[in-house]
Length: 285
Image (cartoon, rainbow, N blue to C red; front, side):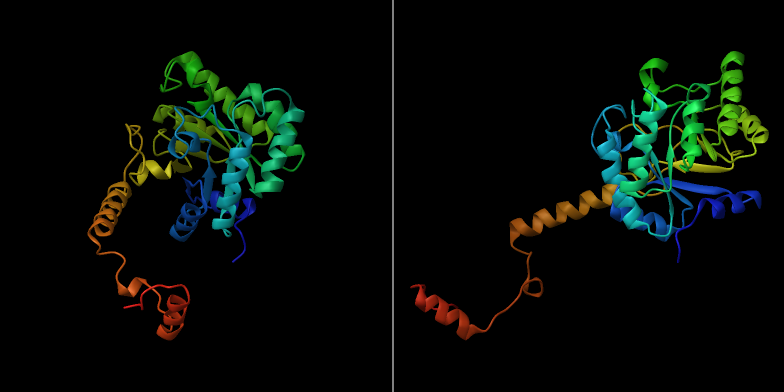
């Protein structure tokens, strides 16, 4: 099966299909996401928190993203993969953004990049799109601006803030973005923006009226030890199952249950006997 293309995704959107996007940060998780049939995989800079143990996304480097995104692309050979441009990799100049997005495309082999912001990054989005790089936008709560927001807060509740988000979304569409993530936005505002745009919206904490949804896989699978966001639904507790399995392994090693005969390899007894005799060891039992 050939990798799903942007044309495939947009064709499905125009027919009324809802996009399903999940995060993945490594080869095995990407393989599972593809087997589950998700439409897009996001290699988010959220890997800083759920994989690398940072308190936020700001410490994630471009090298981190290239390495993890490359693993995901190899693990999901048929799925459309989007990777985040990390903090300060597209803010200095359009030329900087082009070089850094180019690394994700040429080294990691992703099919698109995502960046945060609206009107302030519209020219950058346009430059990337003109260079042949598909761009997904990200509005509402944008994690790279967590300290500017003063924490993890819903965005767009006031009239001025709602107007700014609405205008930002139109600016991203005009700049050539193929889709926009709306994060922690009031559901009615997300619905209004979705109705205004001719490109898909993907919600995360933005209600059910968006054209698709994205969740952090570690949150929905119970692999993130901490307070889960309100908008996350936990579909499994894989973390607890993993802990139980490792605890059983530890117990079996300490009690001598593992490894058993079926987990070991044999050799010709005569070979072992000659080796032992040659080096002065007692005859093997």
